[in-house]
Image 1 (cartoon, rainbow, N blue to C red):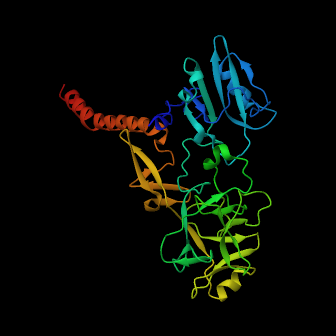
Image 2 (image 1 turned 30 degrees about the horizontal axis):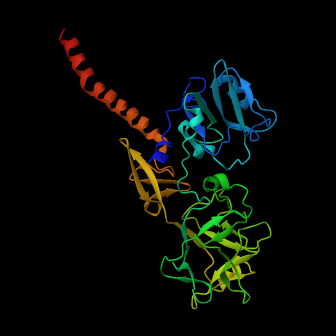
Image 3 (image 1 turned 30 degrees about the vertical axis):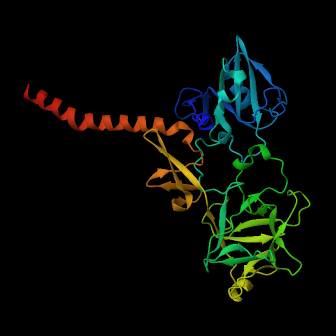
Length: 361
């Protein structure tokens, strides 16, 4: 429960006080996995002094050393520590790492503010249907509706009518372990496909069949590189329900023999695979819950039951999030909604009464 409380953030406000400013300030908020004595992640490689939050934000906005879209400021008496963070990975949304300052006991009596450029790092991130590292999902053939399976005795990757083998995507080079679960899986990039809780990776056995092979922790010299290629080449993101090819070692398509249900990697063209009547188009089926918040309460729903629109997901008209408390933001949305209702009631009820009495007078 304490972990969930740390996800409920104070309401952010705009940097210049106008609602259209993309820079948002989060009071009493810090980033997860920040080392207070380690300033290597800043734009200059050092933590700087600043006598105000606004000057700290300006250092980030006007950084010449490297791109900056987020940071934090810790107030210390008449001045403070300014930490404008270097934007290392444009696809990593730092808003997923926001936590209440309580996660660091050293900050208990200090004023702490985090800030984010929401034009670069959208808040809240409306991408519950996007595929992330360590998401758990099934792989299904689009045409035959068969699911990727594990043949226990041989280790071969076969296909069956049941959802039984859960999978996840892992990076080849494990350089982002701290926030790995917040990294989206991008199309046309090599990764490894793993059975969670095991060292099994999808690869090719000596008989050239697709198989689940035991492996060490994925490394740069792995021979089990897998990438997901959207059929629609214009799509920039990988999301659930999207039709994709699964490509092994950059050139081999994962295919399924509809009769034997055995899968192989084939060096071929899409047209030739189509002419041969093989299954070669897949979609990812999520096997985890996402969340929506309403009237101060949090509700979970399996993502596969949601209505999806590219990377966005909805349930009964509610936008879904991967954050289990929706960052606490929907509480303010409900308050705003209530104000709208009161205004409408006032217009429809009291104004006509007022006009009636004015007319009689």
